[in-house]
Image (cartoon, rainbow, N blue to C red; front, side, top):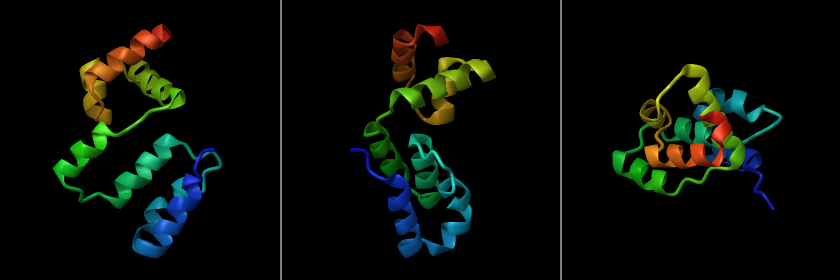
Length: 107
């Protein structure tokens, strides 16, 4: 069973971050609420996060197949190298290389 992130973040923003509701409302109104939307809202809510917290969180991210394909398609559309893509989305180059082996149609 997948958690209802849309409901979770709506409640969280309403209770703890009501001043950020205007920034997040366009994401929360989406019909299909995915992993990228969760990351976007998290980034909005934690704009002032410290570097250490960001590094810690990066190690514990998980990506589903749909999100991986979105990232790889973004790389193709914008003609980015693995290094450029890794800096843009804050993903390791090794992860990108592994994904490209899994999905050779994006290579």
